[in-house]
Length: 481
Ligand SMILES: *Cc1c(COP(=O)(O)O)cnc(C)c1O
Image 1 (cartoon, rainbow, N blue to C red):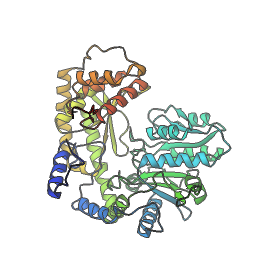
Image 2 (cartoon, rainbow, N blue to C red):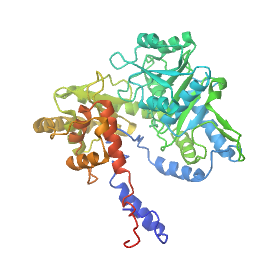
Image 3 (cartoon, rainbow, N blue to C red):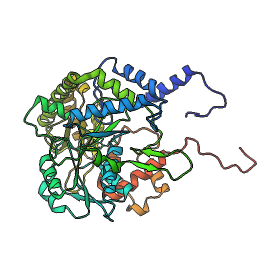
Image 4 (cartoon, rainbow, N blue to C red):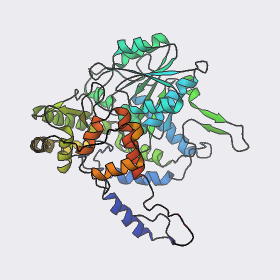
């Protein structure tokens, strides 16, 4: 347990030693064996550079760019680089945000506030669009219209049929996070343009690798601001630009389109608040680190990283295709390998892979989608990919020998019956109270069997169970302390 407020300050050396010890429990951020959450280019010295750059600007405040012109210059430079990479022109403007979710919330906000006369605005997305759109709709009280996909790709005809007079924004992915598949952007853009509706391309995940994959393979269709009808696009620099966490870019095709994104407020006795993004005070650290990362890697560096990633994807995908018991769920056309079961219990397989040092991301069954394992592939995997195939075959054999998970008898559960006490006893029953999350097959099987609303309730309850001060403050009764 960490005492974050010791009576007396603690020496720096000791503090850092404690932090490093804590970090030892985490999944490995480097080394090309963790296929979610982290993006590793495996470039010597890049971490040190990014950290040094972060330190130059950690205390700079993005609240007011006139007070800190360094930040304004860096943000404009990042937006310019993204615009150049993503088909922008001299009219393109943008904002630096803290991440993909913030970029998407702001794209939805700008679209909503561009139509103050529409009382019940609607957002139209394919079912494979990122969950952050649902979050945006929830936060902003925008109605969400979710259109089923064809296979794994958005279905332009079905989306056209779902347009309403209240639709303020249509969105699609390039590529989707879950399956790494690029939606038919030009077709959807044409529909949006015909209805004079804004169209956002969510390239949060792959926006910094897809342009390079297109340079390597000219047959890939355009997906960016160069496509007529695309009015905004987002790209996370903390994904395939390999910057440290906390930076995404939201580009708009024109300043007029961006205008309703801003929040301004002068009706109070303090400073007039003008915010392009959700945060007001925000650190310059991640922005400086992103500038340093982009300048260090450079355009040819990113092309090289894209080539390595593509080659790693090819190796992993063919290992999956060759292995009995699993199959590729979707074409591995960008930087994701998504595998489904062809006999093996996927959740047991995920544990067996983890035991062999490969950390994949289980995705639960949803609508017509079976459960899958997601692998985000980054350049670092280039050096480890060859050893994945043998370990996968081994893990499938072990999972087959173990057989599928047999669930313990569970009480009939509904979202309403999920109480803190029930979560505590469930967590105890499946061995999650010790802080060891390596054997997850039982938990994943329970979640997979639960309908989405119950899944949400169980995981919310569990996270809330975890997210408490280590030692609950004791109620003082005046006698014992
Ligand atoms: C990661 C991702 C997001 C959300 O980004 P965060 O940085 O996690 O907030 C949105 N869309 C796609 C396609 C993503 O991959």
